[in-house]
Image: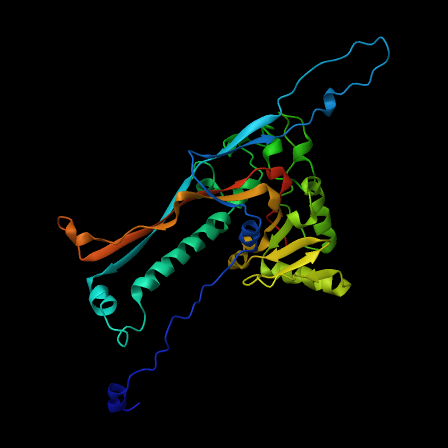
Length: 351
């Protein structure tokens, strides 16, 4: 291009900004429809959970036979702490002078609005990563004592050494509260006596995704499903497409009729929802994950004092030895709670 032309001619810049990172989650979408995204206050998020039956106290007897008595502990209190997250929104004096104070013909993008919108979206992406345990099966930062929200992985991962979820201790090796573990394909973990370690956990066993296998995996959790729509199977798009191809060949799947499903794919098989989650496609570890979720057992809580709340901008130059920039923060406090882990199943090695 001739130099004179380059100097004398302004670039054509289209108004607005092209979004490159748009993403939605079928899991969150369903919780929202069910009104299971809850905004409230309080010191913690708590609920009593019923974990035992009394059928073993029932007695069949003959005339003249003494009647037995007995009682069992059947209730426990699950409690989740509020987890706090923030994201800074910052601009300096040059941005204020050159953009925010500019006229409309000079201001291609309103940076104040753009930065606030971008930060809010950043917080939503952070929430997605926390739910997915940031793509790892190491849950140290996403458990009861970690700074992040309790992750879906931590809720359902079979914990060997005793640790707490929802402030209830559990551990496979010690056979501690196995009823509070995620379900197992072999139905072993929940069927051993308290204090007894199951033979093994099949959670990380290499398995192939087929329709027959999926139906088998659903068996351990189907006892807790009140309606077929309560069950959602979530996987990466690659696995979703593999399963869909098999279902199409057999003509047994039903496409989703929900026109609001933008950002993810969904179909129905045997009346259950099958959905993809594109964040799982971003690492080789997550591409092998399959979650079989009982939606009725999950709640996403936000504290009403910090529900994506944005603070006012403060000029740092007011402070001694301060600098010429403005800073605000978007604040979020909440947690993801599963009130019945044994009604859900997580597999970490599916292909």
